[in-house]
Length: 77
Image (cartoon, rainbow, N blue to C red; front, side):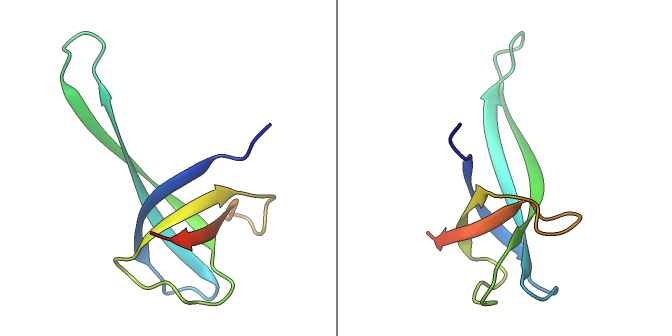
């Protein structure tokens, strides 16, 4: 099964080798047919601490690295 890849914005880089990425998705409400924005935060592994707040990044699923980290940063957009 292929690994999921998401893109989002870095909202926090305070922890060592970790960034928090806000991923937003848009979908149409099934009954009202109105576009809805929903967002979710993911904690991703950043081994070199190179990404800062506001950067657009792409993250990929990986094996669990810690209690909360199951994603790793692949590249900047």
